[in-house]
Each structure stands twice: as structure tokens, then as C-alpha cells.
Length: 204
Image (tube, rainbow, N blue to C red; front, side):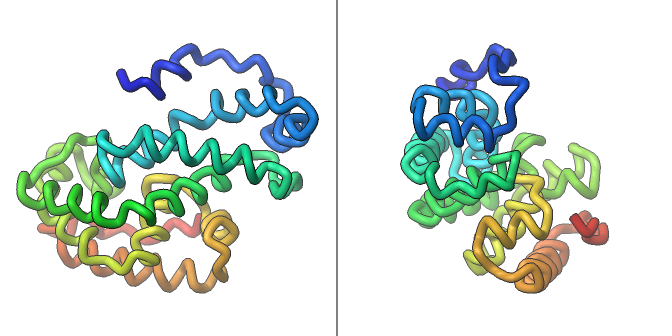
């Protein structure tokens, strides 16, 4: 188990009655309150970072994400009760500083030809066995995407964000999200064997 996972291993939320927005607001006066936001979302951020840059960098991304979030908490939109999309957006910007490490991870996937089931983008459209067999093609496809297209695709697939959340997170128009996602999915679908990604966008 990773250090980040251990820190949030006990699924007990002492702030269960308050939204993330309420906790962030109170943390402006009581900074220690922000720890509850970490407790709720560190695992999600770690999983997202792990998939994109691997174990060598994932924990650094988590640490930098929450440091940056703490520093920027006064700018958080308190109309958004759930901070998950905001945090994943910060993580995405941190990952953008690690493009070389991310590309290396995808090239490694391409060489090995397999990946653990939870690390497979294709698992939305097929069984784990088939997805694992597609790992090589998937790594090549992801490495070949434009960075902006890859960010949108992975926030959608691995971050489980809606189009609107991605648009807000990346500060782009919702139509841009749609076009980038469509282009990225078309390229990934074409690269995977046997039409492993023949699913329609779900309109999130």
C-alpha cells in the first residue's frame, strides 16, 4: 500500500455533515480543517496520477496538488460543493510538468503489451482480459495524443468528470471539451484491436 493510500485508509470522515465547499470556507480561518479535503480526495487524486505517470511520480503529484490547493483555497468557487473536479484539474496541471515521465509510462505500456486492469482506459468498453491484451496499443495511442486532447480524455475516463466539469477545470469551452474528446476517442478507438472502444460518449 502506498503512503498516500495509508493516510486515507480508514474511511472515516469526521466532516461527513459538511460539503467540501463548507470545509474549504472554514479552512480560511481554521487552516487545519483543510485536512478533511485531503482525507476525502487523496485516494482519487493518487489513482488518477498513478495511471498517468506511474508509481515513481504519483505521490509527488498528490503532494504538490494538495499544497497548491491549500494555497489557492481562497479562490475556490464556493458554489461548487464537491472539490473533486477542482483537485483533478490541479493534478492535471502538475502532471503537465511531467510530460516526459508520462510519455515514458505509455511507451513502457506499449513495449510490455499489458497493463493492470485498473490502469486500462479500455476497460470502459470491454472485459479486463481483452483490455489487458490491448495494453500495448493503448500505450502507443495515448503517447501519440496532443497533450490537451489527452488531458480531456483522461479527466473523462479516469477522473470520471462531466463535460461541464472538465470545461471548468481546464478553463475551456464545453464545445472544446466535446471536440477534443471526440478526436481523442476516435484516435484511441482506431488504435485498439478489434474495435475495443466502440462505445458512444455518454454525454456526461
